[in-house]
Image (cartoon, rainbow, N blue to C red; front, top):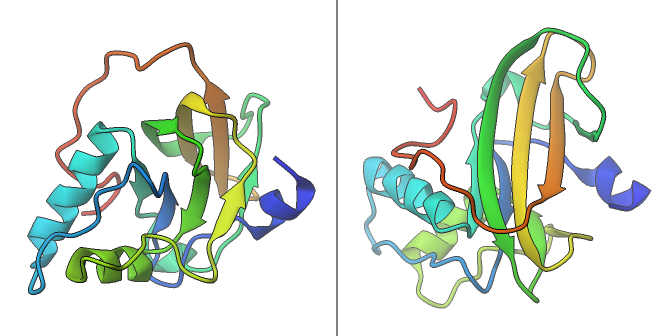
Length: 161
């Protein structure tokens, strides 16, 4: 990941951190979706490897997310783990608002003009977002893995209470 990409990683204005594989992500839910439907859809897309989403919350809206490949020495308060299968369309930082547009309209992309494409090779990757007792509070690690590994299927968006 380039320095420019790493510097642009932030929690969105709604308090979500969202990575998406655009050509694998199935965005449309319903023209009149309900929040519970949307959150369930997000969990399903995470289980398919097309999305990673977590909700650090409003206190972390617009906060920087540091990219690290080193062990965290500060106490970890919580972590969210997912697996994504990056395709030729890449892995993109997007936002909750863009996902809601894709959920409502068939022809809307999960990425908009403000989305950032990350330099991530094609293949399976483990995504780990940690909130720590330190600075920066949010740390991201994206690690290539050989194939999709068995994992507990998600039924909700991590950290969304």
